[in-house]
Length: 426
Image (cartoon, helix red, strand yellow):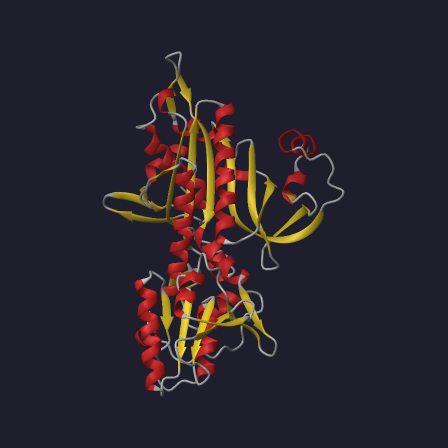
């Protein structure tokens, strides 16, 4: 990508939101555009980061034998009335609806109803089970209190997956399978999440866990045992049988060593049992030739929340000015190298284009800052704003075919050849 084609001008950061500095920087630099409370547009780089997160989710879930599908986000009100949740979602204002001469339609806030309708026609026999379907699609919730920019919006991309099993035992196996997939997904993204014992709440069912990132920007408080890397949502303690529940389901007998910390929820998984199957008559023919209810699991990752958490997690600070940008993980960053030539030196510009084209031939995406009338110092600041992990400056100190490569996370520099740069990035 050549920055001269993007319309990007000089970046000046002012009055950065202390609570959410990462997303504040994205907004100030035009990488996010706000259309209203909880409604955002993505510029090129955050969009590519989001797609990389989605790619990791898809590749990992496929590896764990889950099946990708795509369901409509605009749905007839009838499927919600069938489950009994229509009046609840409409009365509390969460669901966005539209009326037409063809009927009443809903913008889906979640996917249980649509997925059960989808599965019913395909999973008619025990021979078709177990199976886990998943999708990544837009969800809509008329949040009264939007918070944290992408962390709690009205429209947001979400991974939602649903497992269908013949009984409670196989449901637990499907649950464990997706749980392991989620841990691998967040590890690949570069976010050290903790699975937290949670209450099923309105979702119903037997067991659930949240995937939390330790963060002062989070709106959840949990109890955490650092030694064993085990946590639990404080809502659990409101259950009358919490001690028995923690011991039987999670093997936790003593919480005296747990301390309270603040976290950000990025994912949630549930063992739903037969609750939704009962409400929507979700049945299959079992081995005895009789009708039996699906045992279901439900699994979700907030994609936009994960992107937001990643930017906040990767923030870098200038000793003088405070938050000044990001260094995205190499596995996530859409552009690995940023090339900053001295634009009034024809020889440096020619070498920069040579390097840019060579990296492109090798399948390495890079950014060439070919904007005129900007100092190298200003361009280095913009490298931080864009989150590029590696920087090459082609100024007066650069000689011959050697280049100076800077690791933007550590500040370490090394003088290398183009061939050595390619090996490092690959």
